[in-house]
Length: 135
Image (cartoon, rainbow, N blue to C red; front, top):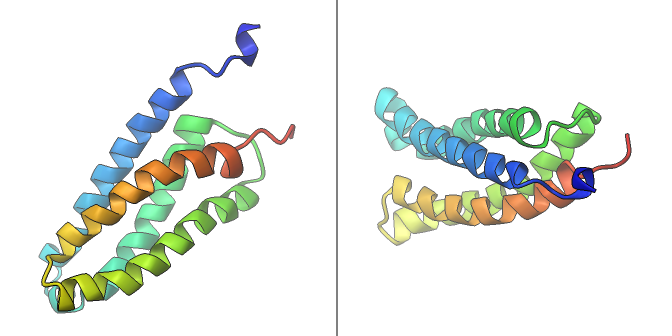
């Protein structure tokens, strides 16, 4: 019976991994803007690089640290990435509007997107990306 109950460990590991991923993502983008002068004016190029690096980092932490699946890595990565593709598209559309029209800092605008990702990612990854397929 205990084997069928979802242990508190997985949601707790998810929160820890999400916190780590959030810190990494929130630090990586501003670090690019700070460390590479080119990215201070080309913040969208920095966003693209940050999104690729952070996607790979997050997939690794969720697969190995949270869900610990042995499923097909390519299928899981495709499902994982599909969640973020929609969010990235929205991010790429909204960030220039928030920065150029709204006058917001790129870092503050990114924080808003991070909040949305944290909430939605649990449901998507638990029910789609890393769900038990009996493999």
